[in-house]
Length: 361
Image (cartoon, rainbow, N blue to C red; front, side, top):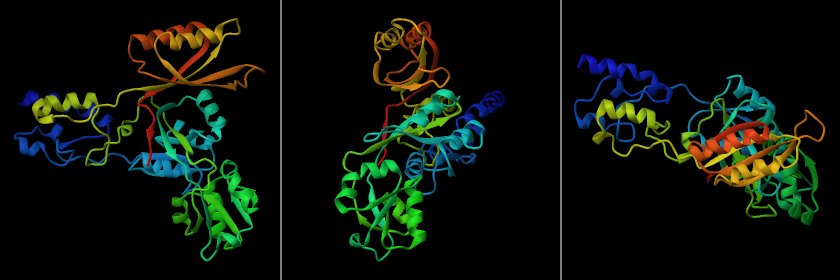
């Protein structure tokens, strides 16, 4: 019995790295009824883990803040003034994760974020897709006929151009949709309105003058979660245990099988399958180099969903490529693909291999 306890104690650090330390590991179960308690009906009590810090650009009520709240059910969301500041906060360890918009179905890529991913050292832990429904927000007592001027982020103004033109509203750009909403709330002017979200209206005590004013009803933004480690964010499965932490990964599951018995563990959640990947590369300045890089991806059975080019900023008319594809790169085909890319590219960097896009609601 003493030897068994020593073996279990030696595995506590491994379990702690997974974000979950349970009393069952510290003190082996003696009856099935003791095992089926707080954590997902499987384990005993959970020790407290450090609170996650999630960085985003903007202020409370920004779309990135809303997305971060939907992705991370627990954790402290921390606002930063720019994408660069968010990236630095994660890179330097001030925050655990950063949430960035990388693409909008109407406006396209967010180039600054792609550049940060190429030039920096962080990884993508997952990509989430969130519907964007713009609303026209005014102060209490205002009506649509009172509005003369509308403020919002330039992309939001562009996405609602038809509505704004039809009503003859003057437009004023703001750094963020939430900043625009806050400005309207602080001004108290019934002739001023902001384009922002329903959630933002609640945050700043504004009333909704018009809903769903986007030109395109199917308006969505994809948000990337970045971290210092190249591993998928388990929250992408959409399941969480009853302690509000991540589901159990395979490594921790194996520890618990030995401690409590496989028949008691049942179908505990495992790590989600890696179904999508992102990588960046630059090709050699020679004939056919880009074609060979693209062939390395498709030739090994991986579907390339998108390829984008951006100036490398290191040499005039030199570009890097940001690729998103489908598939798990951990097997032989994935490793072969990466080796072939390395043979035809000057730089290849795998940003992440994670579950396919998750739709936020």
